[in-house]
Length: 418
Image 1 (cartoon, one colour):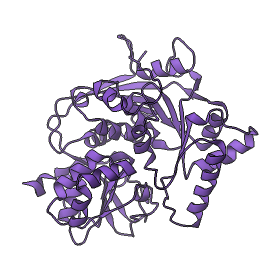
Image 2 (cartoon, one colour):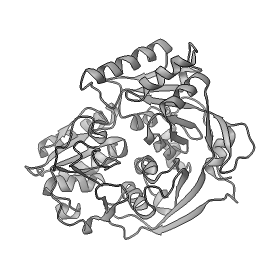
Image 3 (cartoon, one colour):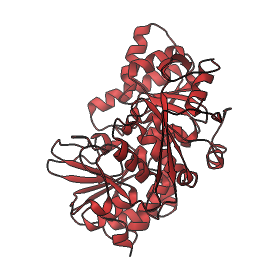
């Protein structure tokens, strides 16, 4: 068995599982947020049970519309808050919260070998620590809150091997954008995507979180990394419960194995209106922008902010460009403050937001008007994703987003750092 199959087999009490097999398995962490939790709670009430199966395994995070932007979002948060307090489950509200997929690993809530389900498609982020993590609908989450069990079909696994070493401004975001560009938004449909190779071995945990996060943009069921010393060093100070590291068998089988040498790879840009519409930054052409967003569950971690600050330091954002920086959690915000990054951003003419999903889903804190164009470190650029259906979103890494904020058009970091 491969890594995904090993984890799933252990959680459904079987010695072996095979792709296509339907299983019931135990969930270690069950997640929802201020958009999806209210639906799950209503369905949970319909089941007729009074208490969740285990409050220590359920977590709710207010992150999409908080601090609340309007009455509707305030009502959503209130409904979730009251249920969380009633049930005694883990709950992160304004002041303690962060973007859920940055927050849970930081808090040690998700650990290697876990099965994690969340009512959010980017739950697959946690595969970076060697967990099997996947998004599900709110009704599935309701059932899991009541029973602790979920059912799923065992996915096939596609192994991706990235050979070579990455250049200075090339990151995990570029590898995953390139991958999606090569295989398409359905290229890994209902498959576990396993990321390996020299470039992965040398990649930071933040880069791995970014890649796992966007497995769903290729149609993936999960994105998985093997646990190595970097993973263990990240987990050790955070874990407050036992966990198990799973290793695949020597004769593990894969649906396919795809290899690339990424040594000469440029930063990648996804053009409107699909993450798979990807080009090297040198081939984008002259695209003037109105907004640059640096943050989200994809690229709102401290290393992302450091890269953006390195480029913006001592410079000014273009007078036409609104530049919005969104740290992923309160801790990341504090770290950025202590390191002087926030001062760099503000002196450059950017604004720094409280942690929130905000503009990524077209929520608030950076909605686009008709005809506007944005470069963003977020994960989706569908029509209407960040506001008007007549706006355009271009996806890129933090270095490209910062460089573009300075020039006023999509630019390579090398253009402003020579």
